[in-house]
Length: 166
Image 1 (cartoon, rainbow, N blue to C red):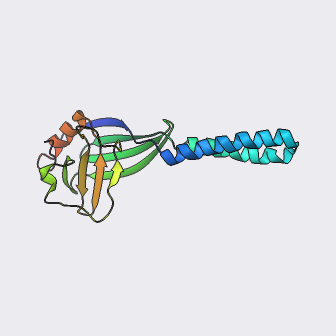
Image 2: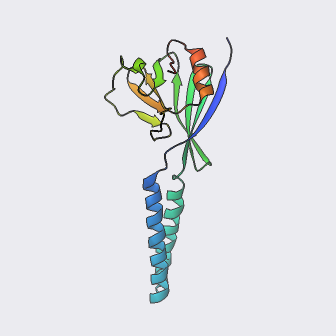
Image 3: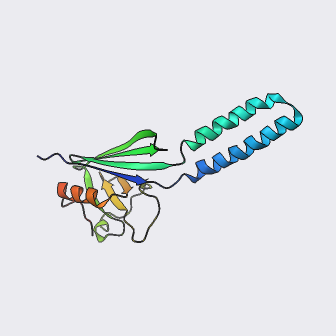
């Protein structure tokens, strides 16, 4: 039994809600500072500090990256916020994977659409050509990923009847 290890880092779709919230907090902070100096109400300093904290918190979730780790018949997906905070999102065992294929592949026709919304751990946008892959897991989950060629190759070597790269 050979141990295989491959990692792939993919930049996810930017969180537009967090960016819009950050811009809103910046505008409100500027307006509050101006109002504080015009009126002389230094009680507004508490509001200024609250908006500053809001800017900091909202900026922590604007940039998202996904890291795929393939470690001996197991795919681990981590979410990285602003290249600083890492969170383990999911671990998928290849014994429970039904199929892995590119979006739009004829290999996915037998599996159809699942009732749940797919879990999107991919780049989040449809490129031309679309290089995202779909994983059907345990018959109840549909996962979208954007692996590189090396990761697809190692997954295909591990489960040749389940992984397709057409």
